[in-house]
Amino acid sequence: MTENPPRNPGNVTNLAAPDRVRWLAVLRSLLNGPVQSPTIDLRAALKMAEGHNRAFVIACLRGVHSARSGSATGIDFGLPRMPLPLPASQGSRASELVWLAYLKFVMGDPSAAAWLGAACDALDPTALKTTASDNPEPWWQNEMLMLHALHSYALIHRDGRAIAKTLACADFHIREIQPDHATNEPWAAHAYASHIDGRVTAETLLHSAQIQNAGKLTEVSRLIVSDAVAALEAAASA
View 1 (tube, helix red, strand yellow):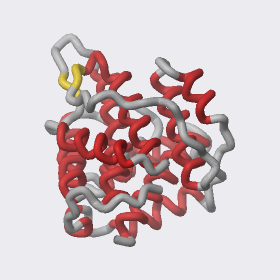
View 2: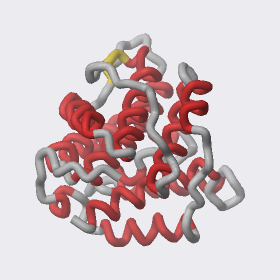
View 3: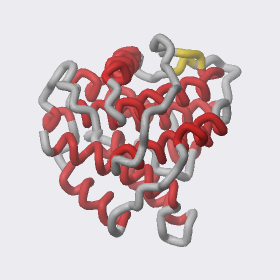
């Protein structure tokens, strides 16, 4: 995990919901023990998934867990200048870039930390801009994918401004979109749980993730929840 100092430190505890300890316990209980870090050829997985939104994001998610276990090596994917905000029609590309940056951040790339900080600054309050012709569900899903990675970055980096921006984004989601209509996986559940009014949204996503798999989390959902736990633990230890 990156050792870079906080870009703009703030009081993380005051910016998050007062029951973070309870949420950590809830998320840990859903994992029911440690999540085994997947063994993957990260370069090959990313190359194969490039241009395929979900596959690329999941490859990055698996890479994040491998990096935390020390089994991931450097990747040769570079990042462009931070492009957010983008139109909703380009949401798939935007979510891939955010997840690539988050993977590189967890692997210790200082330029990725700066990129993610700029991405959080660009939230207004969302990452994507929509028109009347945009399909809402892909927009919602890409927003959630990005919010998950950006909120994890903000908590791990103890970046007070980024936490405030991601919580403002979560606030918009809670009030204006229907996260559980966009996905049956718990993307950004920790961001909603970190919002003072986000309990029901977080619980709905976690419940939906379990009922899709006979009361248990799928492998991907376990990886999502495990990343949320790692981010919340990093913030709690600050």
